[in-house]
Image (cartoon, rainbow, N blue to C red):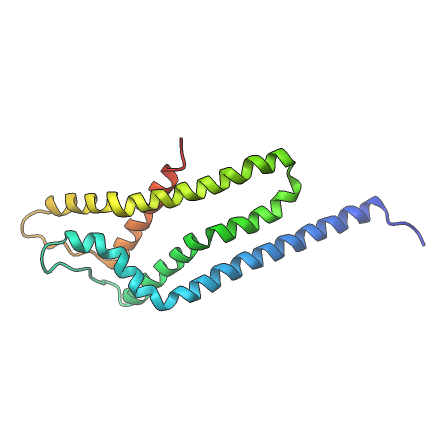
Length: 177
């Protein structure tokens, strides 16, 4: 028997890394899908909770509208997916960390772990700031500048897209120095 060559060893390690990457990706996706499926029954409640800052600022009788035929179905579904993504982010980051960490030096691991945790926490704080402070202020302003004779009725998809962009912008801005 001949001993394995260096080329075989490198190829074997590469395959091992690819298998590990596939395993981590499957675990991450499985966790996300599991959370998404668990949130599906609450999709309409989640949307009602998200719409609350706007509905409180609309004039009496104001409401959200659905322009597209399938909007009442897809908007809450889309929101449930994004909530699942945000809630599953610690699990997703853990899977990434578990794949990358063995290749880091000990001092790099000590430095990176607090940075990941603080970035995640700051993102969540930014989203909470946007929901509780920014959105009510924005909707108060928009309600006051609406011209006379114009009924402010927002499409549920347009509202969801607007709010998700605000959450992303404030979540990311809270992570910056």
